[in-house]
Amino acid sequence: MELINQVFNFLFEQYSGYKTIEIVLEAVAVLFGLLSVWYAKKENILVYPTGIISTLIFVYLLLKWGLLGDMMINAYYFMMSIYGWYIWTRKVDATHFTPITRTSNQEKLITTGILIGSFLFVVFVYNYYDKFNTWTAYVDTLTTAIFFAGMWLMARKKIENWIFWIIGDIISVPLYFFKGYTLTSIQYVIFLIIAYYGYIEWKKSLNNNLQTS
Image 1: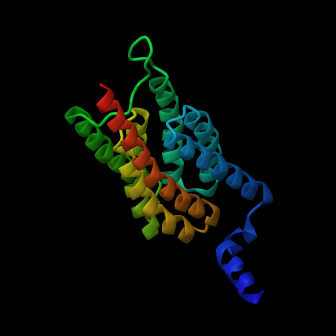
Image 2: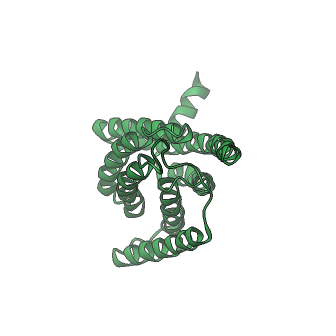
C-alpha cells in the first residue's frame, strides 16, 4: 500500500495546488483528445468535433497556465479541425469522399514551409514574451512545429501525418510530465500507441485504394 501511495504521489502530487475545476477540465479535454485520435485512426469524421471540444478546453487551460506554445498548438488545431472537417467531407466525385493519399512534391514543400514558419513564429512569440527561461520552452518550439505540420497533413488526409504525430508524441510524453501535467503526459502515451496503429491502418487503406484504382 505504501508503494502504491508513493507512486500515486509521484505521478499526481503536481495537482495538489490546482483548482478542482482545472483538474476536471483537463480530464475532459484528455478524454475528448483520445477520442479524436481514435476516430482519426478509424478515418471517422468524428475526429473533428471531438477534437474541437478538446482543443477549446486546452486553449483555455494553457492560456491560464501561461504555456503559450502549447496554447498556440491547440488554437491552431481548432482552426485546422474546421478546415479538415471540410476536406474530409468533400466529395471527389459523385460517390467518393477525399481518399487517403501520400504527399506530392508540392505538398512536401508546403509541409517544410509550415515546419520552418511555425518554428520561427513560436521563437518570435517566446522572445517577445520573454518565455525562454527554461529548457522546456526550447523544446516547445520544436514540438509546435512538428504538430503544426502533422495537423495540416491530417486535414489533407495524407498518410505521412502519422509520422509527425509519432515523433511529436515521443517528445511530449516526458515534456508534459516534467511540466507537471501528468494526465496530459499519459494522454500522449496513448496518443503514441494509437498513432502507430493509425499509421498501420491508414497504410492498409491506402494500399487497398491503390489496388482498387
